[in-house]
Length: 282
Length: 339
Image (cartoon, rainbow over all chains, first blue to last red; front, side, top):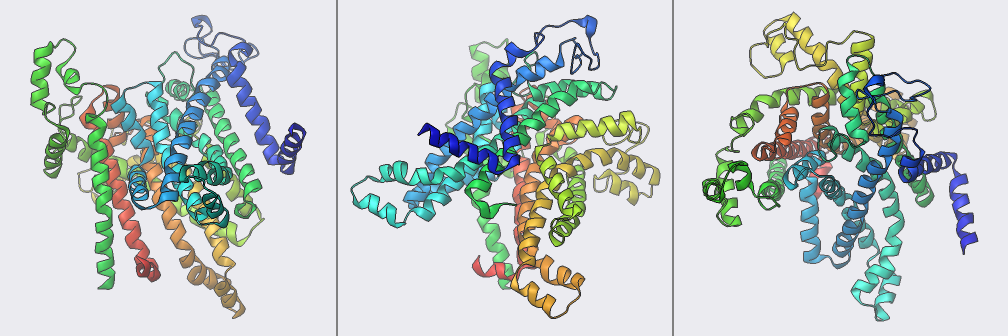
């Protein structure tokens, strides 16, 4: 079993070199997120005004910020918080979206109408603006940034699950499962949903990048994460004040990290999609 | 006539969406945790004065009753008072809206002007350098955080090259805003025949609009390319080519109009993203639009202002989607049949 899984994983990675790059970058990100605080040369919160605003050097690879904190250490340590926000938001909307989408697609009728209407209402807002409104109303905390990001991602999962369940609802094997005495919920959870999972996983990967951008955007305008905490969005916001006077390294490196993370998840999503659905390759 | 009925019916379909939007914006400030009355009464308030504020704001009534009052206020265009500026929220939004619209629409225009030819060229020459350029731009554009793009345009064009004016607002302080006609400084300056102010306003507008354009470019170019590729491989294009029509004519009269529908749909989606991205760009460039207003309001928990902002953005978006749907029927008569 494990040998089989390993061989498949190797096939997935070697089949397309771009996917290999994506997985390498992904490993890098995960390493930074898991072991970041152990790996970095400086304390990300330690201020030292003697070395404030120094350009990148051997001692400080990414330079230092206005309080003399090491930008490299902060960028690496921030990976954990940024990924945690994005992953938990996407996990939340994946679970809730799949459940309500599957119910709408399988049962149809009133359930479908109510759920579709709800999803349409969320989609009627410019999504980032809605997220701002939600955080403003629920309170300015990191958890609420997670909830807001989850809510604005929900429609994509709900719609996808609904469409995928709907086309399979009347397939022969579903009828067979039902005829052999499985309840509706059981058919949905054990027979239909596993078949819907692959396209949903592609969506998860593509969506993670977007979730990271949204969360970073929210903290860029001052929502969620509060200042001394290292987080990419807020670091770019802090660095923004120094751009006009030429201290580019404050904003560049956290911005690049953000870009790299989004790029990685998009590449991974594209790679997964190519494997699952070669026709939609672009 | 049939088309008019179609359009009216489309307006009717937008009604439930409108109701949904109003309910959500209402709930955003009323049904969620926290006591607005305690907040408005201030930190030093005792239980009695909080109760007083509660009655004054109508918060002591039931939720449906409050909703009814909210609807009545909305119908009169009353979005409440902004506690941070002391002005009615509607006035604040209306005076700032032109700044945001000028920025968003210019950004969208630049994106369309670049993305459509790029996508079409990439589709007609698959595998060429244009195609690779298109792919590169699409991939980069999707991964670039918009505030980051903005900052680095500032760094390159203001700090290094010195071509752009300092990224602070719509007009350099040495210039007076042109007389108010449309609220778009560039257009107003032209109407007033003031070329210098026009140039100054345009210079301020260039970088933020370019930032938005880079952001909007990617999905538009990607969709144009995909849609054109599909149309170019269809039978009627092959027939047109086989009949010996010049390539330019095949492209412009046969292929492009048929590829336009998915592009328009994407345009609607891009506009939704732009309205959000606008907030970030306005912060980077200190642009005095409704995005900056919303950020200021967010920081001081000015609920009425945030609520008004979310509502205004959603209404703009619904309006644009309506316009796009109506544009469908003009571009493609087949759409009206299955509506």
